[in-house]
Structures are given as C-alpha cells and as structure tokens.
Amino acid sequence: MTKHSFPIYFDDDPKLDRVSLAVVPMDAFSGRLVTSGVKASVVGQLARPIKNISGQLVFINLPEENTYRINVDPSVAGYFAPPESGFPDPADPDAGKSRRHLIRLIRRPDFPFESTTTLIRGVVVRDEEPVEAARIWLDALVKPALPGSDGIPKPAPLPFETRSGDRGAFALPLTIPDVNNPRSDVDIENGVIKRTLHLQEGDDVVDLEIEINDGKTHIFKEPIDLTGTNEPPFFESSKP
Image 1: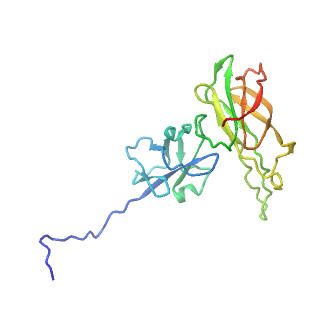
Image 2: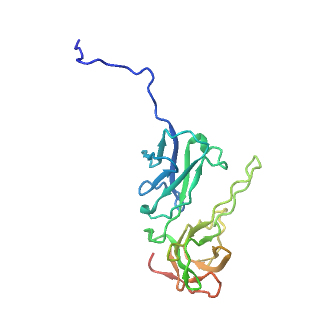
Image 3: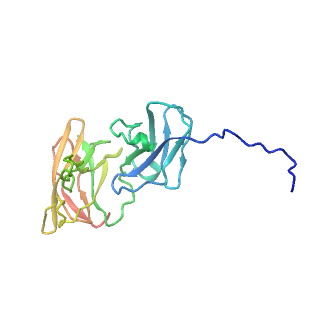
C-alpha cells in the first residue's frame, strides 16, 4: 500500500452552502428566462450571485433576514430596469419555499424584436416635451378563465404592457390568440382587430382606438400628447 507523505484530515462537520434566494429574470412578453445581460444585487450585501445552469442568479449564505431588497439591472439585455423589490413576497406564499424570486422584465424600444412580432410603436409627450416612464397598455386579448371545480376564480390574464423610455419612445409587442379558440377575446373584421390603447402618466390618461393587423408593425406618425390635444395618425409599417 502506498503511503502518503502528508497527513489526511476528514472534516466531521463539513459546511454546506445554503441557497438564500434565486432571482429569476423573465421576459414579460415571451415568458422565457433571460439568461444573459442581467445583473442582480441585494441591498446592504456585498455578495454577488452565482448563475446556475438554467440562468437563474443564485445568492448563497446571506445573513438571515425577514425580507431581502433586490435590485436588478437588465440594461445590457435590452430591458427596462424594474423597481426595487422585496423577497419573499407576502402575496406569494410559495416563494419562500422555493427560494425563487420572479422578476418580469419589460423590453425597451430598442430591443431587437423579430420581424413577425405584432408591434405598436410611438412617442409620448406632454406639451411637446418627451415623457419618460409613461405606462402604455392594451387590455388582455384572452378572456378570464372560468372558476375551477373548487369554485375558486382563476387569475385574470395580464394586459400587454410597456412603458416609454427617456425620449418618450415606446414599443408594445402583442400576441394575437387564435380567434377560433373559445377563450379568445378577439373579434376580427376584414382581417383587422379593433382595440383601445391606453396611455397614462400621473393624472394624464389618453385612450386611442386603433386597428391592428397580426404579425405587423404599427406606428403613430406623430407624438401622442398626454394633454389629449391631438389624434396622431396610426398606420402599418413595413419595418419592425
């Protein structure tokens, strides 16, 4: 038997890494995990996350706290920075068990959208000044699900939503469901879908009736004034 030239020690109490939380950055439009270009940090902590195989950002061995405050920077990936959030979320009782903190990321106007994406582009202003962080949304195109056998109402579908950038520009991607699906809330007339686009910043709200063609990019030819003083022309573009 070969003898070692040095003593070997066995740790009777090995220390195992403990997962404190895993930040899960998800594309709010596609539902896919964003696996690159996203940074995350915990307020008051120097620890940096470890990216696992699936792309989640895992923090280990953080000091025990009732709530962790998390900041996410997805700018390199082409998304708006979400607001600071807390983990675990009291509204999600399962989050603390799984240690996963889901962050839905909204695409910036300069995101490289696929050419077949149904898209609405425009610019938001107030008295000719660009408006940043205005909320732009279109009501959900799918009907809320009926209550299950237990009688508990199912969550209502989320609206398609984005916000304006620092120059007031926005790009709102949509997914048009199959009109033959009984859950679809879409009525098509001559290949056109008629909906209402909502824009809001502060107390100013504008509602615009628009017509959408599936798989096409649509553009407001003039800026949308939140004071409600104009109705900018809306047309289909050949460019995404």
